[in-house]
Amino acid sequence: MPKTKFQEAIFTLLMAITMVYGMELYNLALEGGGLTNEMFLLVFRDLALMGAIVIFLEKLIAGPIAQKLAFRIVTPGEDKPIFVILSISAFTVCMMCPMMSAVATLLFKHPGTQFFSIWLETAAKNFPMALCWQIFFAGPLVRFLFRKLFSKQLAG
Image 1 (cartoon, rainbow, N blue to C red):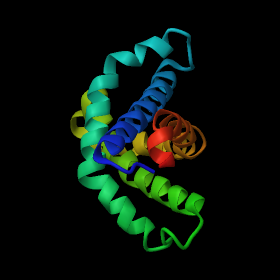
Image 2: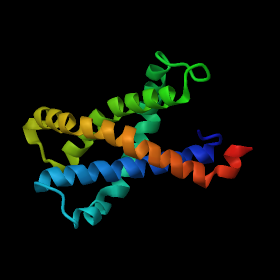
Image 3: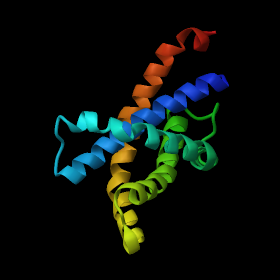
Image 4: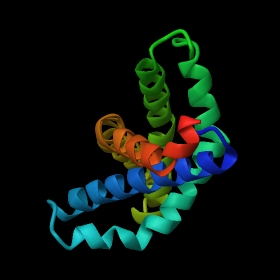
């Protein structure tokens, strides 16, 4: 969708914020035994740090690998755009979820010698939510907002 480096930066920022917000909220709810109204605001305390980490890992590692993997099963321009989008999205989640679960384990869970076990549990809990959040909410919302923000540039 993005046609310029600036548009790509905005798209990445929107996606990172949306994914981090949803996943942080989910993990707070898991930790707290359920979702509360205050959690919707508590999420903001870690949003900048986690968002920066997400952008760094996505640009450096996950994005390029996810695209290569996706393009092994779909071909842009030949396959329907929705299949290309879903393939890239799914492979991105497959790459990002284990990495961000490792980051969260190190930063928030104080794993000590149990790092591997806690990381594995965290990734297993996060993966279904990350995939559903990306495919059914964050992805469509960010693409909608992006089209609205850049409607004139994308039309031309």
